[in-house]
Length: 363
View 1 (spheres, helix red, strand yellow):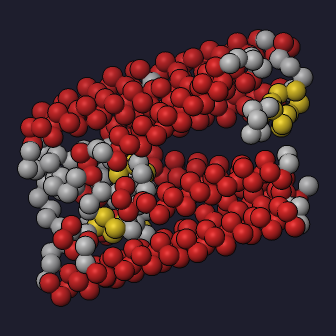
View 2: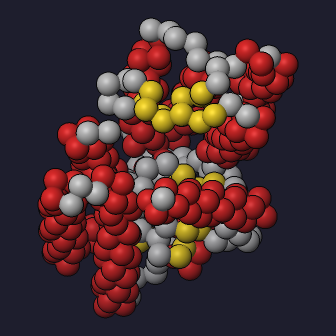
């Protein structure tokens, strides 16, 4: 890979990481600021406005330094692989440390303000809408069945590839450069093919669990317009359900066309479609009824169940997934038995990926 291609690969990722953190306060709804639950009228206090400006200033400074460092590594020392590691992993660590620092400050400010006002943190009155719950359960059952289609397709294609192993190319592409040409290959072997198929199948199962968990996550009804809120939430659940289905189908199709070395002009179209679906899914979540200020109370609003505002740990809550306080989408309930398994699986996957990256840098 040339130096220019290396820069064009790293910089879009860095810019996306920077923009995501910079604009995150606008995406998380009106009830939270840097992982802390807060009333809307208090969110506009000068203390929190200054805290937000300080976070963005330090984030921008770190981004500029990282940007310059990547340039130096690529053009001065010719360290392409190291520039990937420091540029992306280093900036991610910096963002994480900066967020935790800001979260602690926001939590302290909230405590000081509420103690002065004699504020009671949350109204724990819980409203249960059985009619809505029944409709939601029907949607969950529907997608549990529909999502089995790409899972079964993956299983069927895996069996097909196993029976046609001898027809696979001797070198299998696993990475493509900015021009769309394959630049990383692995030799054909039973172990390598099995690892690729196994990885895809595990990703599909993980996406299945995540998708169902997202639909099952607690929905909040707008207390000022209950009837309209019910209709909006039903439409919202169906929409994200079908968007996840499209993602699963595209991922499966892309994987097997790659493994079988099927040259198709649809590859670019599928990549663009995947990006558009993800963007639309994010936009759908940001505009979801759950993020409105007048949404009803739910157990995950209690501050004591959150670790750094990003990890939810409530053994008394049966929900597998809940809405994030900082970030787009859902987070896993560590207090749920299945949640513990998923956290361990994700941690092992990250450790394995990091080990593989470090190993490739040293070789």
